[in-house]
Length: 316
Image 1 (cartoon, one colour):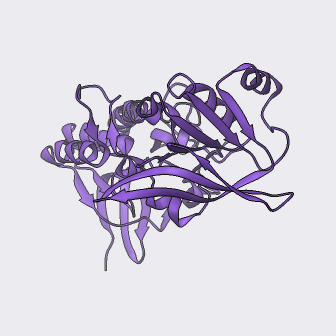
Image 2 (cartoon, rainbow, N blue to C red):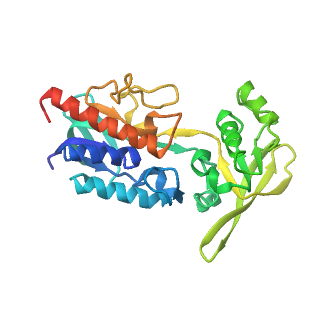
Image 3 (cartoon, rainbow, N blue to C red):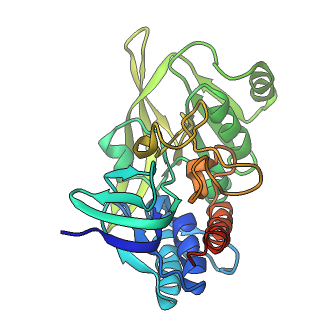
């Protein structure tokens, strides 16, 4: 079966990928969007989004992705509900595979996002978006006047915990060691905060909750002391994972430039990668902000960069 050729292929369908699709489609580039195994990205496992401009009453994460997808498709973006399993950016046209199905492209926008590191508990998945979160700046507001738990001991955990003290009445940091791995200044900041307490030498064995008529909510965590083996329950209204994120870049190892953490590297103040014609957008290149609106902004930038680059090549 011959490869299907496209002007622009977009890998990923979160805010970055779908915004890139919208802009590329309006430029008559007829982009194809590989939506992957989680169409809509991380927002599909988020409940209410209140900080995306244009929705004063808030909007559910999956609904936000649906309206952006519809907007992109209105101008000619083509969705493919399939994962990309292999790429070859060494020669042009670029080659992209979904299993055995081959596609070629004049330009590629990589918007594969990042995944929050989780504990791997079934209950964690059950309550994800219903009291379990990996983004304090996204969801902290919903815990105003409540008590929460943050899991982790590095800078990410301390940053999350400190931010959550703006809303929560109490933040308990659960850490498997008896001292933090965070930088000294972050440790001092947490130690001075009267709202932050610690559960040392402890791991979360289970997240407990209720499911009343389909309404899920976290009520407690079951902790195990790694030194004594003692098991206890800690009442809480929410659990935030502060053990970091992992960029979804395995596909591009050996082809696209990455930093020490595996995030893709953009050239200067553009979305260009080390390979001309391949652009990057969203959380896959962002270890700092990780917000839907910032991802959407870089999606716009990547589409504009791709359009201008194709013009330079005489291929638009």
